[in-house]
Every structure is written in C-alpha cells, then in structure tokens.
Length: 138
Image (cartoon, rainbow, N blue to C red):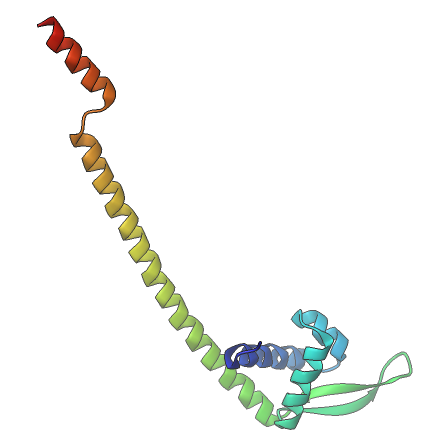
C-alpha cells in the first residue's frame, strides 16, 4: 500500500529521471526507478493528468513511434517544490536520528559506568577465596 509520502517520493524520482531522459520508454523508466512497469504507467498517467508532463510522439531508431515525456513548466516547478519539501523532511528525520543516537550512546555509557562501579566495589571469586585462605592461616 502506498502512502502519500511514498507517492510523492516516487513522483519526485520519476520527474527527476524524466527531466534528464525524456526519451526513456516506460520499461526503461521502470528499470531505472526499480518499480514495476504497471506502477510506472500509473505514476506517469497521474503526472500527465496533473499537467506536469506532456507526451510527444517521436520516431525511434527501430522505426517504431515512441513518446518523449517532457516536463512542462508546471512540472519543473512541481519538481522543485517536491525537492524542497523532500529535503526538509529528510533533514528533520536526520536531526531526530542524531538525537536518538546521542541518547542511546549516553544510555550505554551510563550503563557501562554503573557496571564498572559495581565491579570495582564487589570482590571477584578469586579475591574471596584468597581472603578465606588468609583468614584460615591467621
């Protein structure tokens, strides 16, 4: 199931690829994006219906007609806006992860310090045996 966030990320990836490679077929787009051909078709149709991309016919080298998927000016603006919001979201996630990592490191350090303190105060079994032996010889 796709969430709005993953859908926006997929749209952004597709817009970025189309901006550089408008000549790619849907099959090539699917391969580059790492998604199914059906999902690629669905995403492309959505971008076409929103007016972010337009399809233009062109002649492929194998004498078949193909499409150029060209970003419209609205598509370029949308790609920039999606990039800005995606970057802002990732920066927030990054800061949150940094805080979690720091907290976990602090927690581990506190546990290690506590364990070291306990180990320093409690004699080990060799020390106990040695004390017993000394007590027996006195």
